[in-house]
Length: 133
Image 1 (tube, rainbow, N blue to C red):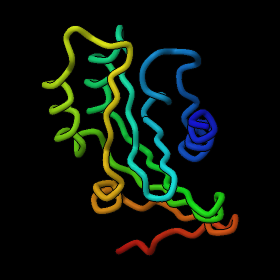
Image 2: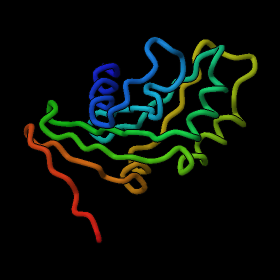
Image 3: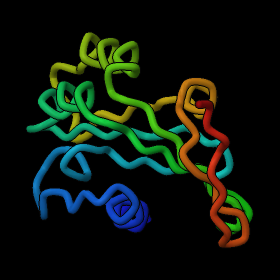
């Protein structure tokens, strides 16, 4: 469930979020998950969607990709400013009249290419990518 990934992200980045508040998942991050290299879905609700879209451009995004019944999980990061190509387009295409939910996707391949790999879990063991000095 998406709430499980949000709790996991909260623990990893030490961000408790805004309990029961509309908007981003945590205080400074949006958490997304995709199964087996699927796309990352963003949903915007009728009354708060445009505000959330604008906020999404200003916060970090944590992308979990999982497969093999959670035997392999990658976590990547991208700041909202690097995702503006999506968010600006979605704002331009924002529906009027507005449906109950406006759903859009960020492709896994974009995240894989442009996101920063933070960690990998393989069979419950954490590995971190090599960093350059």
